[in-house]
Image 1 (cartoon, rainbow, N blue to C red):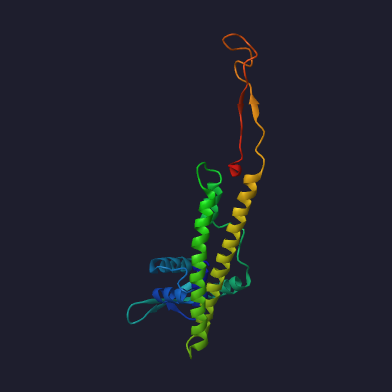
Image 2: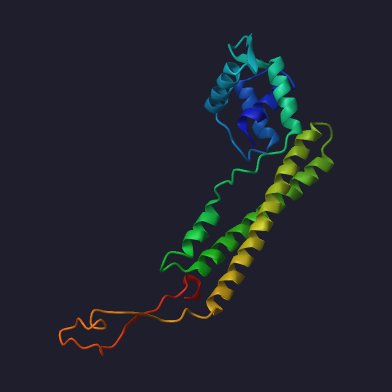
Amino acid sequence: MSVRQGLLALLAQQPMYGAQLRSEFEARTGGTWPLNVGQVYTTLARLERDGLVEEVGADDEGRISYRLTRTGRAEVAQWWLSPVDRETTPRDELVIKLALAVTVEGVDVHRVVQTQRTATLRHLQDLTRLKQRATTHRESAEGGDGNVDLAWLLVLENLIYSAEAEVRWLDHVEARLVREASRPRRAARTVPTADDEGLGPAGSSSAPHRTTTTTPRGAQ
C-alpha cells in the first residue's frame, strides 16, 4: 500500500496532524506496515507541494493539521476506482535466494527449502492464532469501531493466504529439484588438445582426447 495514497485516504475523512495520521494508519492495518512520524511529515510536505493537501492551522499544542484540497479529493476518488499496478515485480528475498541457490556450487538447496518451510509454517500458525483472537474480539466486543476490527481481519487473512501460497510454492520447488536430479546428465563433450592436432612433443596425432563433462546444476 502506498503511504502517499494511504494518507490521502485517511485525510478524506477529516483533517489530521502527522502523529494522528501515523496512529490511524497503523491501527487500520494492524501495525503490519509501521510508519515513523518523519516519514509521515515528509509525505505530507510532498502532498502539499503537489497541491493535494493544505494546512488547516495549529491546535493548542502547536500541532499542524492537514486537509485535502479539491485536487486531493479527486486523487483519492480515482485511487479507489483504479486497480493496483502489478507491472512492477516486487523483489521477494526468498525467490531471489532460491534462484541464486540453484546456481551456486556447494549450496544445499533442499535444506534451504526445508528451513524456510519450517519457518513459514510457524509464521502461518502465529497468524492463524491472531485471526482467531481478532475474530473472537470482534464478535464479543460491544460498541467500538467494528470497521477497524474488520480491517485488521482482512490484513490477517491476506497474510495467511500469502503464507499458505508460499508453502505450496516451496513444495513445488522441492518437487522440481527432485525431477531435475533425475534427469540424465549431458553427454561428455570431447575437446581437442594440442596433442590431438599433432602439435605435441612427438608430433603424434594418436594422443588421448581430453574430455569435459557438463552436469546440470539441479542433477548434482
